[in-house]
Image (cartoon, rainbow, N blue to C red; front, side):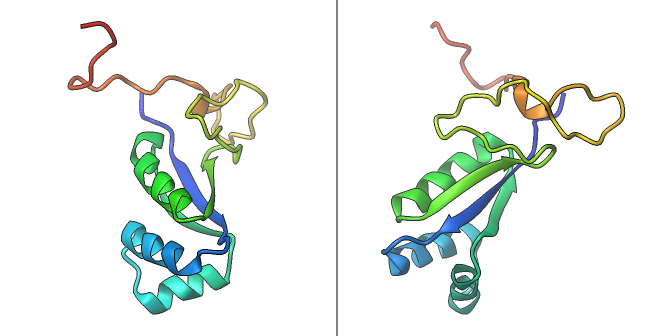
Length: 118
């Protein structure tokens, strides 16, 4: 099973715009000019991927004072800030034969990750 795709959207800049611009450039690789354009036109998508890949980028942007929302690409629901799975509620997934949101299912365990007890 493939891990669900999410998109991180920067929805607010807060008061520390210069610090946020530095974090945004580090996360996205944008130039100074493109980073300022993005900050001037919020909300804007910043990065996409699975939740594990987005964790560091979202944490860096939030530490710099940005308001970041992580949405499921399949249904558009917002993922909780604490890393929990989305509740298996109604989903607007357009894929035929899909009865639940892919963000509500556990991602596959990677072989190099520990399973809990040692």
